Length: 119
Image (cartoon, rainbow, N blue to C red; front, side, top):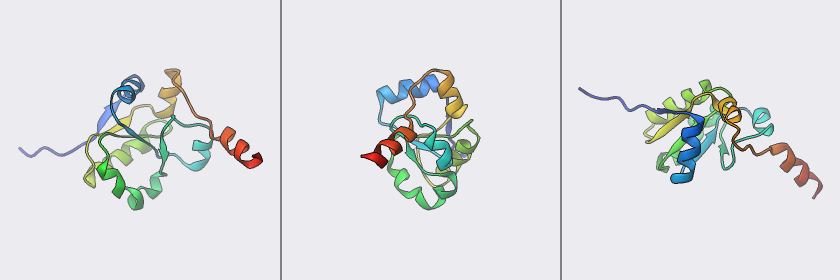
């Protein structure tokens, strides 16, 4: 029987532990206005709509975790990445809502934008 490649579901606690143990590329697929309110530290931003033109470098990543607000858009992103040959792909179940509920750290982009605008 041929097994289909698929992505893995990961919860906030598992992601927190994975980040401390292995190299992980976090990809925030939310819209820019959502990212401005805060993101998980070290995440890069690739809006879901841009993923089809920006996925190629992701194929070289060892562990790839997608997240969004609640986990729906990131599940689509993870499925797309797997379909394009990415390996060790994860979706953060519950998205930033779950990350925030678990009381893990956020980076606020608004602070950086304000600082950069006046420095």
